[in-house]
Image (spheres, rainbow, N blue to C red):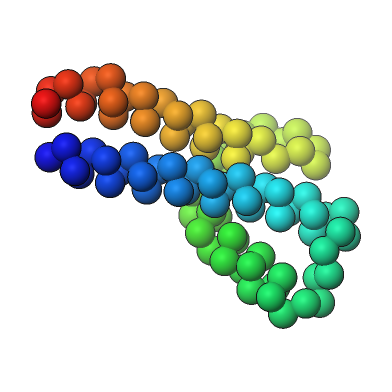
Amino acid sequence: MYALLQTIDLALSIFTWILIGSAIFSWLYAFNVINSGNRFVAMLGQFFYNVTEPVLRPIRRFMPDLGGIDISPIVVLLIIFFLRSLLWTSLAPLVL
């Protein structure tokens, strides 16, 4: 059971880094720092979109319109932080 908790924690940690990478990629793309015509850049952008959009889309529906600012990744990061804390402070002691 402890291995399952560690696996869930690892998956949440990996998703956190993917979410951070997606945010940085979107900034670089928006400010035209990276070449949008490059095939690798397009594939990387598509990967980030496919992985993060199913999680971000429901949060964006409930968030107010803040103009050009998207804070849904911050909300997801806070939820992940809460889930990881809950996992290790509440669930892990029950298993051990």
